[in-house]
Length: 76
Image (cartoon, rainbow, N blue to C red; front, side, top):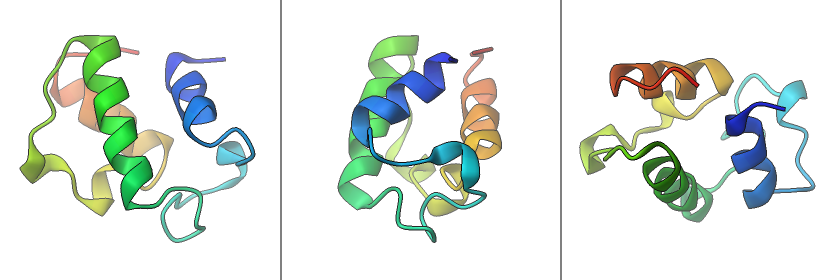
């Protein structure tokens, strides 16, 4: 299990993120979950995701989140 999968599972253990192509549209994450995810990513990877980066397209799926992390120099 990747670090990202572990973080997502902590936030929503009942959700099947692997089966989803859009976490938000599928109802796997809501706005509160996004804030928790950002805080967890910031803490775990030692980065600071700006408020202007907290937009749906950056959190739709694993690839989008990994691309956001890559922009912050993280290779998770």
